[in-house]
Image 1 (cartoon, rainbow, N blue to C red):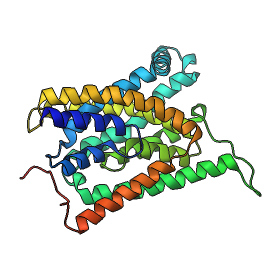
Image 2: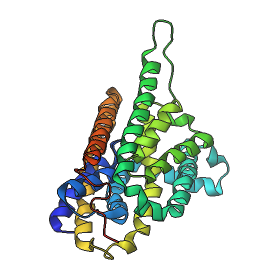
Image 3: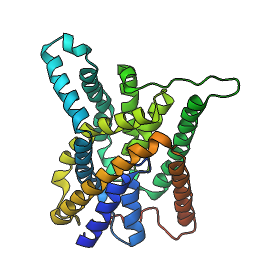
Length: 290
């Protein structure tokens, strides 16, 4: 991987990690359309350490409260009733599904799951799912002629059941094209949470899984065409861009719907399927031979 490739891929990672459009799919597609070799699952996982560092800094006050309350709950039974302590436990519970499936499906994640036909399909399907979930949230907020406005849940209403369902939704993002934020936000909207609550918990829930995945994949860097220098450059750029994206995204969803992302996902998936059907792009483009 050249320094220029790392520059572009780092920017793409930072721009797309927290938007519900799938950063892993965009890294894969950027390499395909540029004529580069697939950066691979390990490169994606390691650069996500940069984006998760942005989450740690942006939500530092929330995370500080949660971690402090969680440690207090280990020795003080009364402290376990604190919402922040419960959030700490719920983030751990919600991280279990992706941890188990990530280890179980490691070979598939690095191989068959990177097929462009699968990526195109998941872009479309999860785009539609996000669109339906978003419409339900809008309907509750708007009410109607024969329907009262329905109050949606905040993170104070989060339960162990909901935490596990969030975790299962996040685990779907092991397939490129799904989108970690897109899947967890959709799950949250279907469970009746507000857009802001679903997005905030999505970001917090990603921290253990993404950092663990990135650290686990560190040993893979330098084994193939991806070397340490370009990877560090991409990770640093991803951090800087991701921080700005988080700030923008949290403000955007407070007043706007997810429909622009839904339309983008569906159109990109259809375009990709069309290019594959026409023989312009191979489903395995950019993959290492053998």
